[in-house]
Amino acid sequence: MRSRSRLAARLFVVVVGLLAAASFLLQVSTVSVASQQQAPDRSVAPKPGPAPALKLPAVQKRTLSNGLPVWIVELHKVPVAHVSLIVKSGSGADPKGKYGVASLTADMLDEGAGRRDALQIADAVDYLGANLSTSSTSDASSIDLHVPVARLGDALPIMADVALRPTFPEDELKRVREDLLTSLIEAEDDPESLIRFAFPRMVYGPQHRYGTLSMGTAATVKALTVADLRQFHSQHYAPSNSALIVTGDVTPTDAVTRLESAFGAWKGTAAPAATIATAPQLTSRQVYLIDKPGAAQSQIRIGSIGVPRATPDYFALRVLNTILGGSFTSRLNQNLREAHGYAYGASSTFDMRASAGPFYASAGVQTDKTSEALKEFFNELSAIRQPIPPAEVEKAKNYVALLMPRSFETTEALAGSLAQIFIYDLPQDYFATYTQRVRAVTPADVQRVAERYIQPEKLAVVVVGDRKAIESGISSLNLGPLKIVEVGEVMK
Image (cartoon, rainbow, N blue to C red):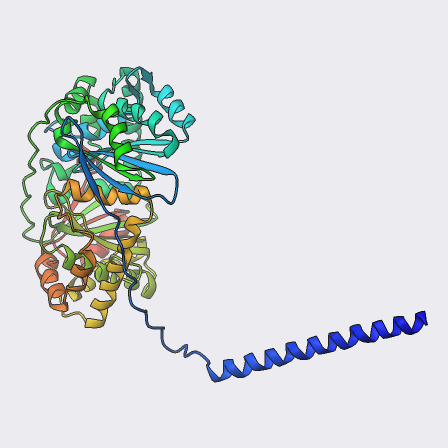
């Protein structure tokens, strides 16, 4: 009886297995037939669906007792807060002869403040699980605090000390200055860094503020003193020139109470805003060559003086630049990287500032393909002025419009986006109408701004590379007068 039971059990297992196998084969067969009947057409790219609706968080505005504006956006998904103090003065406010003072002032804010030295500030911030940073651009300086919301009350007094009560200790200034000077020396031997200094100097000249990078030069950095930093701070870091932006897991009532405690006693009036004169546009094409013997690549930047951030052509230029060199599938990148393999990547940008910043196209190219790459650059710079197919314009508009939500992905990104509205006095509905305004750009708009702002016969061509290997090839293109520029002329 026991053997019959075992035999029956085994037969049952076999039957169940066969039934399962048959069911599986039937499913596979069904899927196979269905897939053959509904095979996707892989000969064409799938069409994108409609863009999802973007719901922007509300900005709630308050004012502290000293007149300091506070912009608050509640985001309660993650228990963190981001606080940015934006000061509407950057390197554009540097006095002549003291280029680099705004940048160095920002660098020194957290090197000693209130009753803490640099190490004590760093230890206190780390203990709170926070991050505190300072920075400066052409048009603004900022202090940013990212902190678990449970520690916001402990972190704000540290941030306030850094922003309002920096001590600018002499020994720390010496160390930071030496680091900057080392960076400047290293830049002279690195073609990729060197062209960042060379291009604006050739386009704007040494007297215009945009002709020198925000960090200044070795001569100006060496000359800056603690008194210079204190003076810049007292003249520009004031409630009348600033705003606080708070994003994250906060409520307006609680945030304002905490900010009033930390920043409400801040007094002072900022100096009148600096006005940067618009530099004269180039009138002819000029080629500049900076010799770096043995350079493995030639660094190329081709451009001119562009437009200020306040230009009414902003959205048309965003679409135009996306087509030319503002995305991976742009014309420049497809030409120099994909079609010819001259460069790892090629791009273009309109660097828009309070005054007209530079426009340039750039790439690091193989030394032995320098002249060929230059030729292709000008092929694209000329072609972009011709009517652009509507489908290409539509693709660029989709790219620009659909990229915008990234500006709201994190508390930090959102604070940075709101800072742009404050710094450049943009309309309060700027982001709410952003996609609509991008969509309104027409092929005719793109051609108009291309013809107006990209004029190949009025561009500066700046090349950093091995002169012995590339000069004859560049000269053979007859792009314009060729001037050899010494490294010292670029960096002084």
